[in-house]
Length: 200
Image (cartoon, rainbow, N blue to C red; front, side):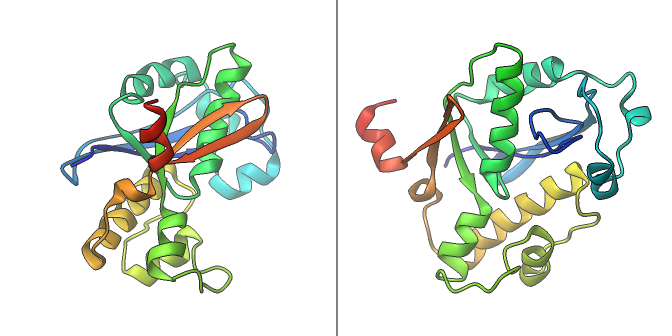
């Protein structure tokens, strides 16, 4: 059975290239074995719109860990865990841009997206608008979401969705794993079949 790292990030402004909060859960044998949440000093400006969404202010992140410290905690899991996020391209692109800003190469990450799983497995591509928004999909599946746009609670809800879908449907998550590479502001994705063929 594959092990996973479930995450959610919040951003301080519309550039979406820095992080002001992150939540992480480690799934081993489909059980949560670790969980952590932290505010992050993005070393960047905050937009009023973003503050209105997640309610994180510049004053709140004063003295919080910087992105480099957060990445040092995440990066050891890139090789041996599949990342899971709701609308994963957003979260992984934020990570990629934050790394690019610091001259750090984005490692190859294998990932699953719970939006993609929901669209394919649960709704059979017939979902109506809004069905796959984290708050709506959580409610639809009976998964608790205490506070939307709080990175800790969003991570827990994403994890809950992933586990609930596995309870409801007989599928192999590895069939939906993709390889994520961010380079030159472009996203490159491979299916897990392509991933196995290349031996990457």
